[in-house]
Amino acid sequence: VRGDHGELVQTRPRVLIMTSANALQYHVGASVPMRGIRMRSTASGRGSLLKEAQMSAESQSEKKVLVIGANGRVGRRVVHQLCQAGILTRCMTRDINGAQAATLSALSGVEMVQGDVTDPESVQRAMSGCNNCVACFGAERVASFADFFSDPTDDPRHPYSVNYQGVVTVVKAAQATPDFQKLVRVTGLSVGYSAFSPVAVLLNLVLSFTIKYQTKGEQAIRSSGLDYTIIRPGSLRDETPPDTLLRLSSSTGLKHHPVGKTGREDVASLIVASLHHPNASRCTFGCTWAQSGEDPKAASTHNRIAVGSEWVPLMDAIAGPDTEPLNEKPHELAVRVFLATTASVLGLALWLIAKVVAR
Image 1 (cartoon, helix red, strand yellow):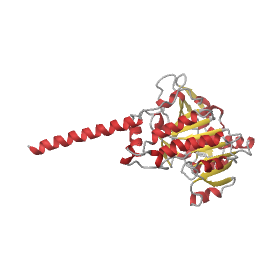
Image 2: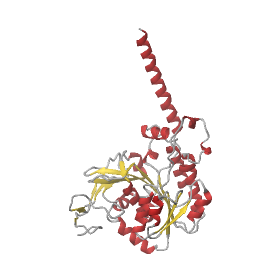
Image 3: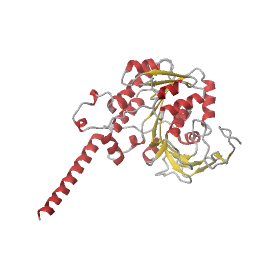
Image 4: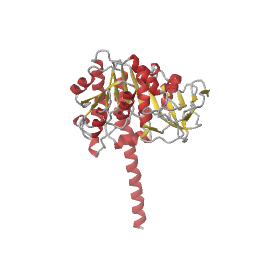
């Protein structure tokens, strides 16, 4: 058969292998080009997704998706995939005159608008007339020592203003928009980690408590009454190595999802699939890559983790509404404990060195 680019491909049958009551591995026989690298569709990165999105677009031809953060490396991939599926797309970005914005504006069915999540009026204007919203923006501010003593509300680029209040602004705009249907938000796998996890501590320390405010943003979405999907990817990469599979978790599986990497193209594919997949309603996903032949790390029969080569079958298998609460975590305490411990160890080391030198 021929792939999306017209190249000759080989296909293998799909097999579903149950490993426990709710933890499973879904081996999808991926279409593989003759050159030996797994085929990816023109934009989606996973073969069957584009066709499903096109079918959805046919039934919702006049509906429009707002992509906030469209100039970002995930956002622009989402826009390309929506366009290839024939879905009308409005891109909100702070810079509509740059090279990335020019590239997006040249796509069929794309409308560019200027806006900032710290400006509620601009968000409401951008949201007007849209039925769905993809929010893939995030703060990129590096922390400073003054963060421990200053008011985060004074800085519009602080994670408090972007990852938390910015999300609240998007939620309010969606609530005020007639016929609004779905909000898809991208955060990070570390939101599900313990506040004392080394990854969470490091990110909070370096990026101005970004995980704390991502968590508060997720809480605002959950309590909004809107239909939503929250996607928590692992460490993001531009290039996808060959022979990688996809790992997806939801509900009780989120806290057992191992640390890992994932591709921006694959995250964009999951976003597009989540817009209309019935199992993705009021659902939070964790996503990373997995290696070929790897089994899900099931901690119990109640885990919801699956591994395969396409998102849609994995969503069919494990997706469902969030069942566990998203509670506040002691992020600031964890960072302070880390700093105090580090200072104590350094102080002890200096004292020992001083004693040795004094002999």
